[in-house]
Image (cartoon, rainbow, N blue to C red):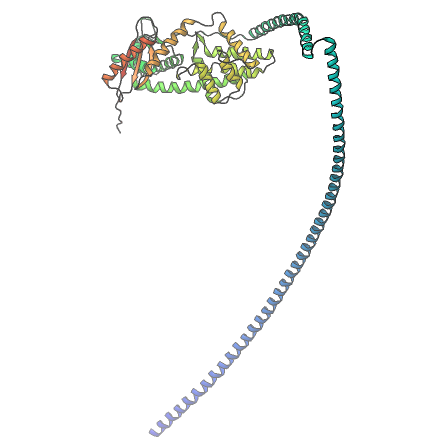
Length: 522
């Protein structure tokens, strides 16, 4: 039994060993198959790679050949172009050489001709000098013979002859001169009368006489109390800010604004009208409305100046000059509105210049600007002639305009027809009956002098002559002038007015010192 078991175990062990070797053999055989397959695939991949490499080499060779072909073609074209340019340069060089040879030949021929002419001229000059000497000798001989025959020298004979001719001709010359002078005077008088008649008949300007007061209408008399305000603070604020005299009297439903400065008075009138419409009359609101009205007036005078220049058709003008032209509406001269006078002069000067053969456009431009300095006299020192000439020179106006500004008051001689037309038109406009009043001009001059004396003091911010020139209100800088100094300043101004200004009655000098502290609650 044990034997059978051992025998079976041996057989099993032998069988396992044999199976192991058999399986190992089979496995090795499978590995060889896999290796062969891998080698075959590798060979196929290698062949494909070689074929791709060959194709790439062929493609690169084709590209290289194509590039070489293009290079050779471009090279041939460049060579051909270079040869053409070389041929062209050679042709131009040959042409230039031929031109140079021709020019040198021509210059040589001209030089030869000039030398020949020079020789001929020298010969002629020698011949002429010889003839001239002979002529002078013969002339001296003839003169000597004449002096011998006449018994006087050449100079004596000349003097006697000229005296006889002058004596004989003097009466004839004087008669001719007198006749032409009379004819010229008659013709000039006729022509001048004709030109003036034509100018005045073809232009009829409006006449505007300026007054010193404006009337502001009220809806009811209760508004007078509101304008005056508590303890008079509203009317004081109005008069101080506007620089005018506000007269509230028994006239029903009206108050009066008085000032010699037309521009200031117009702003004051408009400010009062807007305050009355608004109903809120208090110092803060007064200042707000006043600033708004000032801006509106600045815009309005600029627009008016532009419209006038467009109507006259005199070209482009600097905006500052345009603004000053509009501001002339608020300036008067001897009671005559400065803008109306200026337009009248411009139209008349243009007509007269056209009649006399001048430039009517330039004459109208000079007429419009001849009194432009009057728009500056309230703000700047000096007469209106110098101020007007300076500002027109600053903005490059024509020399005829500058000459007209100076000449219409005799500061310069008239240098052109246009300037003469402006001077004549200015005299014609001013001399028209009723156009001007001397009293207003003298009054304006007096109050202007009073304001200038006050503003000339150190520390003065503003000064206004009000109450028809019987009072001057001086507003000083509170940080520079104290209360004691304000009293001293009032005395100094009053003393200077007494010495320099002629006036009836007395003038009240009112120095106002005000200090404000402003803070905002946020």
